[in-house]
Image 1 (tube, rainbow, N blue to C red):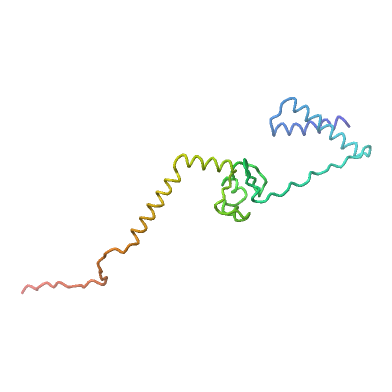
Image 2: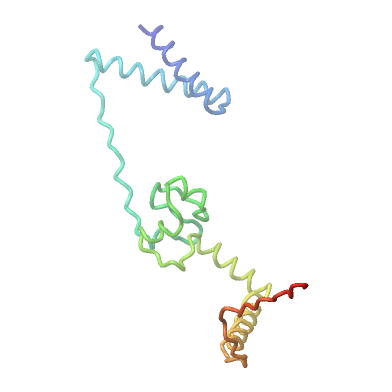
Length: 174
């Protein structure tokens, strides 16, 4: 029977190796582990040994939306993935946009879906480039342009109607 177990174990490890890169030491350790597990399961099946019940880890504490945005990472509330920023591509994999994600989990529309450290770094870089001052200038120019457009302009009143048609008659030659 042990011959058959080793064959099964080698097939399992062979499949693992085809899926991931493993060193020779890792392959040997994996083969031993799989073989020992199969051997233990075989003994339990024949009634020689009773398997110890494996305790399942306690479910992870559910994150609140405010806790999902942390200093160095953001935790996706859909799948639990941790990253520096929830990208459009990641949200598309869940079939939603950033706006839908924010609405679903109660974020304000102005909340960035990025780690706090990343948001601070971007803010600092923008201030260094002078973005806030340039934005103020732009907003003032835009306000001035709106004021100028809204002032009444002097215009002539032109009546629009059908132009009169006049016929030009030719005199007949006698």
